[in-house]
Image (tube, rainbow, N blue to C red; front, side, top):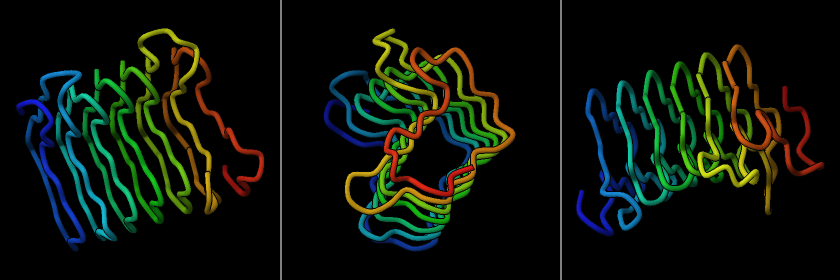
Length: 171
């Protein structure tokens, strides 16, 4: 991708599947690898390699029921996976490593399952500011998320950080 462009931009669509591709950005001046927003539902991303994007490898906003399966999301300038107001998602068997910020960042997102993922070596700039998985909220809630059976290690600050005390029911 060239400067200031996204690999894929999905606005308000239902039932989109992107599979078996390699999406490579040009670094700091590029946009997002995959950007889904505007009440997109049933997004499925599987077997993708997403690397070197200037912002997030995957950014999903205002979406329900996304599925990310078997993806490798690494060395992005910000978060590997950025979730904002995402509910009932399934994030299974992904590898999120050496992203400059969080491996998975979840804000105002509830009822999601992260399972079987390998989230290693994020906060790659060693700023001691970012985590493997970060759950927080700025407006709505980030409740009842399940983080089970993952390998989460060597992230520079915390492996899992529920950074807002009012997030409840997370396992």
